[in-house]
Length: 246
Image 1 (cartoon, rainbow, N blue to C red):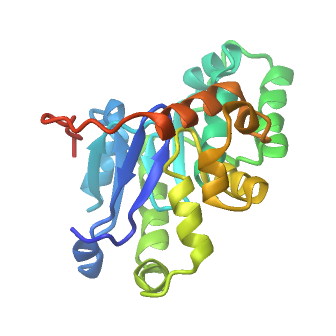
Image 2: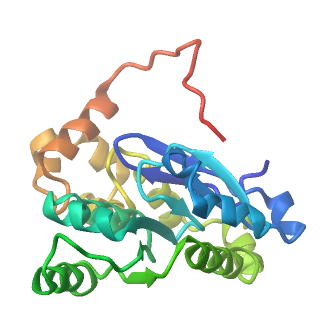
């Protein structure tokens, strides 16, 4: 497996996702699916459509289609419960921090717990305030067909451009800096750019005190503590590294 389409996904833990160039060269699309979706009808349907589904625990999103596109899948009931406990908006924020084009996909339209005003309010907050599009699907078959078509668009129709961007020998320095900073805990593409603009150099960032990190917009106390902990901890190699499920 090559480094084509390799990128980091930042959550409580770091996911490293790699799209296999050999499969792409044979016209096979790939979708990463969270292991909690493994037995679902959507995954089954995706495989029937010829998509290579790679199962592993995803910290953010339920399906990852490309470096820029991920999907959070919810049934109508799931959507309602995540609105009521506030989880939905945190999930949308994490999607936005890690992907340029995230989507929330809702299967079904039987909303029993939220009145129309509350439902519309949640949809407005997602689409207008957080700028995360919300799409509705009648059933899992329709969602799977959409994911398969979008994966093909992201991976095969854009494959040549992606290869040039990822595989070029002279990667711009700014791109290298952003990739490095995105490896820090809880730092996605947006926060990486904010940190680099604030500290100017990675050296300044590494040397910054925790309170300086905390004052940067979008970082906050928790992320600042985790970043500083990572940067200051001694390296200890472990013999039995945790294995990913693929």
